[in-house]
Amino acid sequence: MSHRGPLLRQGYRVGLALLLPLVLAIGWELAVDSGAAPGRLLPPPSRIGATLWDLARSGDLRLHVEATLVRVGLGFLFGAVAGIVAGALVATVPLLRWLVDPSLQALRAVPSLAWVPLFILWFGILETPKVLLIAVGVFFPVYVAVSGAIASVDRKLIEVGRIFRLSRLALARRILLPAVLPATLVGLRTGLGLGFLFVVAAELMGASEGLGYLLVDGQQFSKPDQIVAAIIAFALVGKLADMVLVSLTLPLTRWQDTVRDRL
Amino acid sequence: MTAAQPGRDAEPAEVPRLEPNAPVVRRIAQQETPVLIVNDLSKTYADGTEALAGIDLKVRQGEIVALIGGSGCGKTTLLRLIAGLDQASRGAVQVDGETIRGPHPAVGVVFQEPRLLPWLDVAGNVGFGLADLRRAERRARVAAALERVGLAEQSHRWPRDLSGGQQQRVAIARAFVAGPRVLLLDEPFSALDAFTRKGLHEQLLDLWAEAKPTILIVTHDVGEAVTLADRVVVMRPRPGRLDETVAVEVARPRAPAAAGYEEAVRRVLAALDRSLRPVETRRDLTPEGRANWW
Image 1: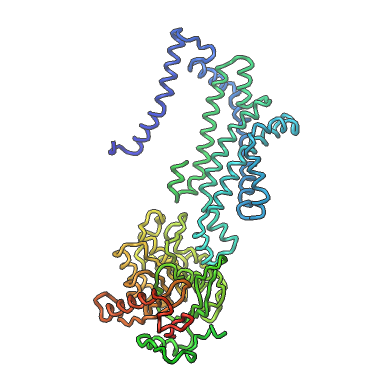
Image 2: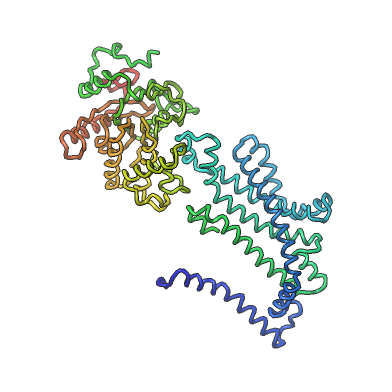
């Protein structure tokens, strides 16, 4: 097999990855088709596909995807910026670390969904609590990644900077920043994943559009095909967002092959 | 400050001077101002461990001095103090008459590990200390240095793709390209195999021959010390002190077959051997444990 080109090998692996879901889908389709299974609670792939197609054609799908993406995007932006700033400050200012980090670690232990009632009380059920909930979900993995990465920068590389008499600012820019970048990007990815997790929770607490709304709507009006369609849309949108993040940041970590393996 | 003046006059008459070192002592004494002056340098850590006690050393322009000694005798500590990376508990270091209070532009360092920045390619690492130069000049100097260490073809590779010997060559080029007056090397070749090490000795001397910086190199390897150094200073542990000094008067380029080489190795080995004996049994040391050759 070693003589195969990398492209061919990749195609082979993609094929293998698709094998299981395809077999299951075809099997379920045949089972429902032959009357062996009812297909009422779990509709066959053809019906889900038709629902997705209808949603896409009517423009509803676009509306819902956009609403969800805007919430995740805003929440991710706020959460990531706050996480990076807080992580950097806590890692570089000892006083802040002793003052703030224990409290943040305690808050981190709170399941983020526990905030939902409070956020609804404070901000109502419009966009603010949704974005805030997502931001909280994104904040913690980014904060932990950034503060941990800065704390574990190799002292020996810092000394190289000292030997060349870099100012504090230059040291941060030329040594700290590139050194913490890989771990930060991993934290951002985890944060983005959690952002999608929390957007569902946010949209379940009351929304008139968004993929999460499709889920609630599907449940209330007994439309399992719509629920599965929304789940599939979530999977696709989440994976795409992750791929975009990775491809945007990959050039920054070209030097580190281990990161590429992790991503 | 009597301690700062290793007393030639105060020396007890019955202790004989070490004859082999007399030429070195005279030569250094004759020199107007050494480039590097280490004066009564001591380092005691917060837990009370005395790492270095009263180091006095003068190194002239272009001289190569090897520091040799067993582990724990403060070789690396001494280098770090001279580099300005750590603060001395007592005493001072001067480079070109300027007291060292922190890393100094005239002092370059090559560490035991290459310490290359993994996110910069080879050329980026070599030019790391030249950020103030104009781009064209920086490029030219980096290219010349890489040529010197035989890595001109590798300038765009990542450090992780280089062998250990190549990485250390990049580190050496990075230190030389900044044009230091004093270059400190902390066992730079200890992790490399003998064959690679020999090549690096030649390249180091090649680079040195251009601008003749003063070099202080820490090593475990007697052969390495004799191959590179004009003077081999033996150190003694607990606390770290300078012990005997062996002048190496072998014509360059040096090889084990050269006249005087084996004799120098023998003398360094004998001095190392003596450095391990208790101070009380040493007739060549003052009661405080200072070497008497000065």
